[in-house]
Image (tube, rainbow, N blue to C red; front, side):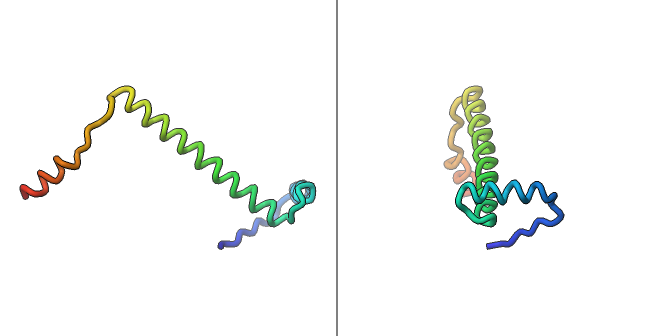
Length: 79
């Protein structure tokens, strides 16, 4: 796993997260790890939702697009 060090944070930010980690019964390191992972997973889920929505819009506008695998193989085999 990689390490991440953040320097020059305002003391009130560090204090806030230290208190939050204690309230959750966790170390500051473990608490921040969970926060960072949750943030990335949330952003990935939002992106996946956007992609699904885009695909649904394309399907609604154009219907199900045909599978071009057979055509590609046919063209490839002619060469």
